[in-house]
Length: 636
Image (spheres, rainbow, N blue to C red):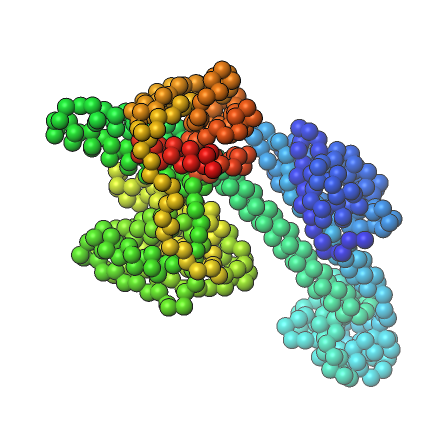
């Protein structure tokens, strides 16, 4: 039998006539959890309801289907072990855009203990000794029974003064035996009094019942008293239990609403991330066509300084566009990262001159890095960009200048107090300013994509969302604390490393003159602009280049020309991806050098070894290096 007071959640899909529950609901109802979670017809739940309650619950269900907003009913359930439990089901309706009811969701609470308490209260109210009394108008005493005296803790007597009887009643209440001299003769004699027993000083509750009978121009009071202390205690316990259950129901519903809101927000952010990643990929392709054409055009135009300056400006524009796509990919968590142990103090110290020039003379830079800091697991280049971005944000928050502090400290996270951060050892890298700060509403939206407090044309709204995406891709997180008028602290939480920080490695790739070693290359891309520019860049390097617009046409060409030495292919193509093409191509030519050109961050999981990744957009120098690297790998 489930523990009393337990609660479970339920969702009713009206159109499918199925009720979905959680495991606790299934346990309370005595159902198979897997089946209940997957959803069962409502008839399966009616079967477990006590026969005497089914009709009443069916009427209530019909009422909510007819338009009632809330459902709240108590009923009995027969469990598989033949126990009878009392349940309280409570929920609210969900409507579609046409205001039609499409379902209900809520909680189920076991109220068996409360019902048992109510039964004990009912029994207590009719149990125990009963004392009798009789009072005739005009007398100062009342005739009482021996049990009457015992209940009030008075010495046994056949009659007692009204003043003595009423003296045991606590102040602020009416009289146990109404005194006609007080003018407080009630219309009826049913009431409950709190008394202090005369013999032992104990607090008790006494109930009085009786009637008022007219007699010779006056009246006569006849009635009984009995001890209801146990019932009052049970009543207090019942109130407390009811309050607890009501609080639990509200708490469960609040948690459910929060979970639903969090799910909707997560789905929204996932959709925005997918959209952003897709836009970045397409934008990369456009930048590829523009930048490669400009690079080739620059080589061929006359020696005209003005024309060269215009082309150089256009190339710088493509570089800025490429930086924006990196931010978009960072938000979508698709940029290419190379996590390694990094000395954060050395990294920031190496940036000092750049930071000071970027910030300007009105802003003072302060660095605070303890000597015993461990290395941090990060991509050094991306971490530099994040720190620079946060420093510029700090500068913009202090229009009249001020101090910007970049600090780091180690912290062991032992619990889940930091959202999205698993327990472990971390480095907190913080950028702190004393600027204008943010109010609560702005702080809550600060890391949303495309949200910015800067003026039109002064910010993309991707800076903080990019940093947040970077931190989470490195298995850390990003937090913001701010006080309006008192500054902001932006903190990157990144995993600490037990390894020594790495130095910049010298490339082992030998610089080979590609013009001296022309290759037979097949370029594959479903985008005609990208394909044309890739072919032109390779041809300008002196290679013999062929082209294909799909994976299947590339395979056909490779079968007819087994002397092709290198394949450069796009990854995201319809019908056949670049990695699938590479796998099939190497079945016939295991030594084929392969370059995978992609705008996404990481190589797909199905990518083979010995495939060189070339990120889009790329220039001619990057393409030449990728060709050299791919050929060296294939020959080793």
